[in-house]
Image 1 (spheres, helix red, strand yellow):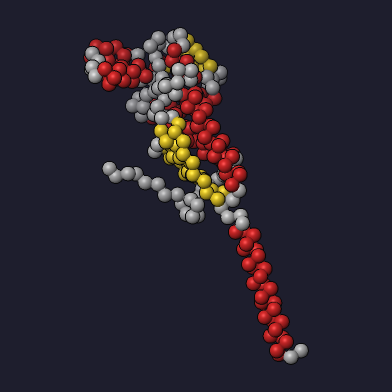
Image 2: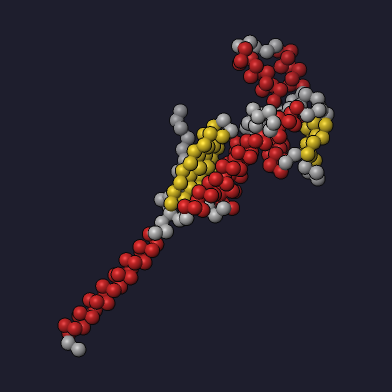
Length: 231
């Protein structure tokens, strides 16, 4: 075989290799990561979910599942919804012992640990005090000192007990009520991330008005970037 023909064959093989590479790259490019960002107003704030996955159907379903879980937490723990599980507990006869859902139990357990770790600074039993100051803001009238002191006597973790064997909460005092505004949103973000992962999406970010959870990497393959506004 002449050198010319050999060169022609080499050129043909080289072109075929390039064609194969081009086709393979085309196949992989058809499976490039898709990024979705969805925002909804839940729990009194803007909740944003950003996630990426090569299958947009998987991505969409996972984001829907995450928002569904956040709505479930809101329906359980909102003090603004009269029929929420928490609102019904606050209106229940006291003293008394009542079963709670798994989600509410998880948050109450965490709240109890936070109460201990902060020496009582983080206290979800401040609902009566919360209500008094909310009324003061609405009426532009300061509450009496004696009224505040009376309310403070009924506040504190000592006024409730958690029974882990039956997942029940026991209200020891008549006036004890709970507000979860300082913890429920963070828990909702946690379960939203769990829902995304359970539905096949590992690379995601959930932001609920500043309560943020980052999982995996950002769409550019680098770590997620978050920041604190100054001021």
